[in-house]
Image 1 (cartoon, helix red, strand yellow):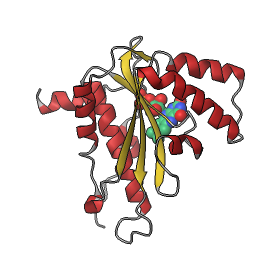
Image 2: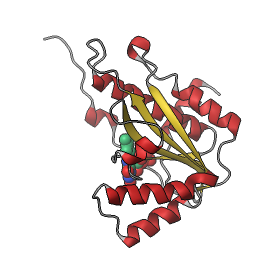
Image 3: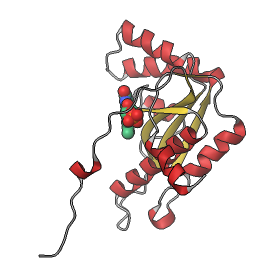
Image 4: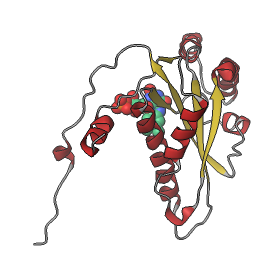
Length: 192
Ligand SMILES: Cc1cc2nc3c(=O)[nH]c(=O)nc-3n(C[C@H](O)[C@H](O)[C@H](O)COP(=O)(O)O)c2cc1C
């Protein structure tokens, strides 16, 4: 693939929430994670962590996420619960993502740790798209409770949980994205 075609792949990526089998194989998951750990990483903290939740465990995970969200005091209406269960019922793979916080790191403030985690997640999303899968980053499913990250092995004292990627084959074609014109967001600085 020419480099321009690779960039075109990135430009054509769309998030799609509704995905189904086939999901990525074990080898493809390994490739997605290899892409993730290529993210820029100040001081080589290697802080990124990934928790794989495969199809056979996703419905049980949904039970946990819904109950934990309610226990944390957030409302989950019966309709919201039904929508969440329906969505998750076809998702082949969830990847929970967190980074190990480097507390009081004078060289790498936490904003940089967060950005590196975001870059790792974006690498997964772009790589999944290039493999023909769709992905969707969600900070629902109890991401902001203590209980859900803990259940995935991420004690909130040590880890910052940043949500889930749902990955699989899109159920329907993506609508074209409405993207802003970059020049409306860009300036060029020149010395006076
Ligand atoms: C950190 C992060 C968390 C997100 N969490 C949610 C979410 O919980 N629910 C949601 O509807 N979209 C969420 N989104 C937005 C979608 O993942 C997606 O980016 C958005 O629908 C735009 O689609 P696009 O990637 O095709 O532009 C989140 C995005 C980011 C970056």
